[in-house]
Image (cartoon, rainbow, N blue to C red; front, side):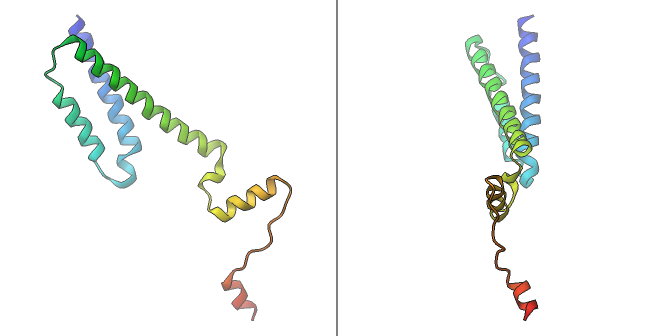
Length: 117
């Protein structure tokens, strides 16, 4: 019974880890290094039978899943509540000035200056 429960927990953890790795790392640059490393780590420890070692590995995997989910959620919240973080620096400065009641002067743009001449 405990062995089946451990196996089910391990499979669930692996799926959760794989899901988070695929969401956060693989699509960015199509690099499967993180995914391959995850497979390697689980395969490397598939023949561990010592109960304390298994418990420790499961706890570590749960911590990693929690960290990855929290990291993803943190990024989502930053984008939601601080949209200026994804804007160029000039736009960010302009929004900051507007927030405190100031207006930025028009910045020099070479293209529009040449058109005026």
